[in-house]
Amino acid sequence: MRYLRAWWDIPLIVDLLLLGLAMPSLYFPARFPPWTIPLSLVFLALGWLWRRWRLGLWCRSTPADWPLFFLLGLMLPISLWAAPEPLRMAHSIPRAYILLWNFCLFAAVVAHGSRDMRLYRAVAAGFFLAATGIALAAPLGMNWLYKFALLQPVLSRIPGPLVGVFQGAESGFHPNQVAGTLLHALPLMLALSVAQVWGALGNRGQRTWSHRALRALFLLCTGIVLGVLVLTQSRSGLLGLTVGVLTMALLPWRWGRWALAGGVVALVLAFPFLPASLVDLISDAPPVEALGGTSSLGFRQTVWSAAITGLHDFAFTGMGLGTFREVVFLLYPMQGISPTYDLGHAHNFFIQTGLDFGLPGLVALLAIYLLLVTGLVGVWRRAGQEAAEQRVWALGLLGCLLAQTLYSQLDAVAMGAKTNFLWWWMVALGLALQIQTSTHIRPTADPSNELGQPS
Image (cartoon, rainbow, N blue to C red; front, side, top):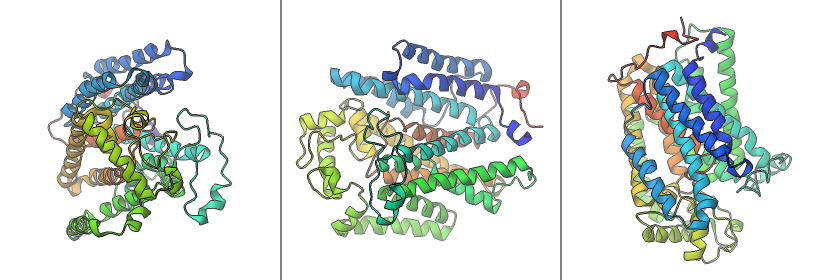
């Protein structure tokens, strides 16, 4: 129990409690009375006031402050303004509520996770539990796509009590979306699991039953998330996971880094000459989804063509947050794709972000990625052997970023989607780790009066 009490921290617990109280009505506004929205906003504001009182700060400064402010402080209001009036209330405003909650979660994770490694592990544990919860719930509401015949007998026996429960997923959760969501956490979970088994994270002196139980629980959660991702049969998800794991395995070695660089160059040079059937194999949209009988690659090429045209026409403001699914059929009819087809996004996370927030918002997103990757590489190189744990965390987060980025070339867990909070949590963990290993951070408050301080 002493190992569990070491994670107990009053400022963190209250902050998470306020976030939990605000979440339901902001995520599902149609299911709650209108007065619950202002109440949820009050809970979010109380979280910021609480951090200011207990920690002496509103939010911890990060290397990505300016692009984050530009994306949410400037381009999000512009995106709401640009959305057509009927679609603004139907799509943009509900997604803006979710984005607001996601950013408050991001601020809380950065503020507490950057205080010390004990709390960093605590907020990371919440991240892993959230991914595991999604992995456990998703099969109960999945709209299974039977791509591999060997899995069909297993999938057909899984009950679907959650099918039709959530608005926007009446026919069930899309397996590709579930796979993309789990990729935000799975590579990091695999890296930490391997490090735990090999003893690379230290803790050799902590052989108590609680430590062993937590380690076993973590390995079980990792197995659940990995198993569900395999069951989704998402080829883009499995490809992203494979490349992310391969990168984590090779990056620590000099010859491995040269091999990765050579592989990237070879792939770029060979890609124009790859047969369409091979590209189609990993594209992940079965012909039946296109409703016109086009191939998977043809489906995506059609969607990308319309999306890029829309990005050109709405370059500075975007179409409006979440409105692509309807605007695209009004302005850019696509041959072979019925207007009744529910096209939730542009099948590319970065193009979709440009459609939501305009090219300025896309540039801000790319800046966040660049700052996060360079910061994590700096952590991995700077930490050295005396801080092996930070190296494992940095390597795992780099694996998550690479896996998610590769997946996002063919699909999207778009900004404002209900499971997009894991993207914000992942980014927050990466930035908090950078702050943890920085020599320029001074403590902002004396935590000696908080409960559960380890002796």
